[in-house]
Structure formats: structure tokens, C-alpha cells
Image (cartoon, rainbow, N blue to C red; front, side, top):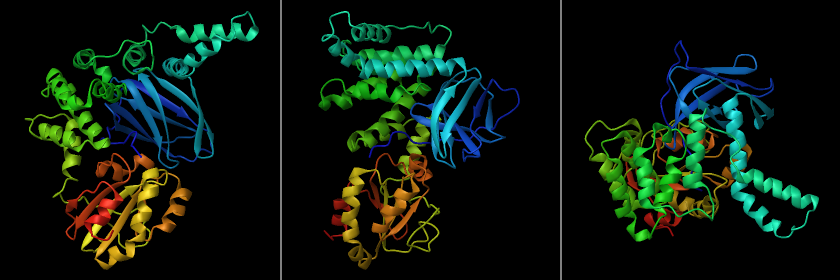
Length: 427
């Protein structure tokens, strides 16, 4: 299961003199006391503030200007929602069903507009092509045909001037230019994307568009030229610039996510060779990768709700070798691979091997049902991709495997369960 998005960053403490305020209201029975507010840097959420509920609402003060995507995460119910800032006050009312957010009423002008535009954009991409096909069957003046024509016209036009909304205007234009699925669009070129990435404003980092635009760049042309194409992009954006360093970090993680290990290692080495200063985004990528490479000492982690052990942490588990695996009950590859390890678990134990499995689930019932079939040490924060383990150990997809020696050094990083079993000669 590929990771969509994972969390990192440091908290910034609120001060007096806010640039703008965020107000979130929820019903009294919504079971969350805290909210975490994240800004965006490329594809990485950065924790800006934690606030405690007062009455039926949370109020968050932003002390510095910010335009871009934001996220609110409610840890007690493991629910989140996305919204935007135009550096103006934001107000939302949540409609909830017990622990779930069912609907959001955006009461500020910017978010209300953005929500409507995104709804229209989705319809343009996925519904408009079908409407054009249906149109051919209704050439007369029937009521349905007239309604069809009206909807096609509505979806085909930009109905609102966005001059007063710098971020929405930036997002809308560049989503349409680089991301939107449209058969009539002229194919993108490497130079077109490279020029945009080199010269666009800082809104790019907070827009959520950077990673999908980079993926679009990588998908242009034959796959055997990827390294040369990336070299050109890195040269154009410059590794001595913050933008270039953020792009380098994003590319390393894209290659990691899609198991393009040679490319990942090449550009990780490029990143490590850079002279200081290196921006926060790239430094975090280097640090996380170095902490999980073969030969590194695996960072300790204290269990939250351990099963099948009395140990308090990874380091407390005594074994000649440890297999650490990250998985989820919703992951189809995990569904096929982990039972193979379970079949051989007794034999692994006889060889002095212990398995420690961290689940990136967020549904308690699904997790607890699944681990009944897994006799090894199990643990989960039940926060999905918000789990701190995903961040600490640079987990980009599930399943992910590490093999540790008795001193908790990484000695192997198998790709699949079969590779784990082969390492210990039990398959």
C-alpha cells in the first residue's frame, strides 16, 4: 500500500499579534479535545500549533503570513480535514457522526470558494467527458438535453474572477496546467515544467502541487532517460537554492516510494555531498534515510499498546536477530505476505529471531481482529499514516521490512516476505 501522505515537522508556539485566526466549531458530542494544525512544505505537513477545545470550538492564531494548504488533525478520533489560507480569518463548522467528520460548512469566503472550485474541477475531470458522450444521444430539444447542455456549459467555463485570491488563483491555474486530466491538452515538456519549477513563487511549496508536478516530469519520455532528465532538472533549479533542495528531497522520496533504489541512492548521495546550509526539508530527508540504512543503529521506540510481549520497547526485546515490519490491515500486499512469515514463525524463533510488527492502521477493531493471526510482537498507535513510527523510520509504503542484529543495527532491508525467509534460510 503506497503512502499518500505522512507527517513531520516541529511545533511553533503562538504569540500575540496574530496575522489571522482559524475558528473551528463542532457538535458537543464530537469526541476530540485537541486539534493539531499543520502547514505544508512540498508534500510534508509541518506541525504549527496544538490547541485545546474551549466549549464547542477551537481557535488558532497564526502569527506570521501564510497562504496555502492547511490541515487540521483531531488525534482522539483520528480524523482530519484540509482547508486553505489566503492570510485571512478562516471559519468552519463541522457536521459529525460520533467520531467521524461527515461534512464541513466553510463560512469564510476563501474556503467556500475553494471548495466549490475543487468540486467543479472533479466534475470537469471525471464527469464532463461522459456528459459529452451522452450529449450525442440527445440532439433534440428535450428537457434532459437542455439540462445536459447547461451543465456542460457550466463546467466548461471559469465562472469566478480569482484576482482577489492569490493562492486560489495560483492553485487553480497550475492544477489546470500541469495536473488536470484533459485529452485535449497539449502534452507537457521537460523544459516547460523545469522553467515553472525554477521561477514560480513560494506558493508552490504550500500548494500541494509540487510532488504531482515532479511525477508528471518523470513520466515524460522513455524510462531509460530518467537519471539524465533529473540531472537537468536539478541543474536548472540549483542545489544551492531552497527550492532546489526541496525538489531534491521530494525526488529522493518519490524514488523510495516507487522502489527505484538506484536513483534514490544516487540523489541521496548528491544531497549528502552538499555544503551547508541545507534547508530543513532536505535535512530531514537525509537524517531519516541515514537512520534506517544498512549499518545504522535503529532508533529505539517505546510501545504504545503492545501485544504478545512484556517488553517496553524495541531495545528491550532480546533476540539474536529482529525482523521489524510495518504493515496495515488495508494493505493487499501485507494480506498476502505476512501469513507466509506467520507459517514460519516457530522456525524463526528456534533460530533466535523475533518479529516486531508495527501496524499503520487507524481502526481498532480491524487491527485487533487481524493480529489474532500474528503470534509475534504487535503494536500500533492506531493513527494510520499519522503514526510517529512512519515518520521516524521513513516508511513510504507497506509492507516495509528491516532486519536488526542483537545490538539493533540494521543488517538488511528485504523487499518482500520471501526475502525475509530466504535471509534466514527457512523457505
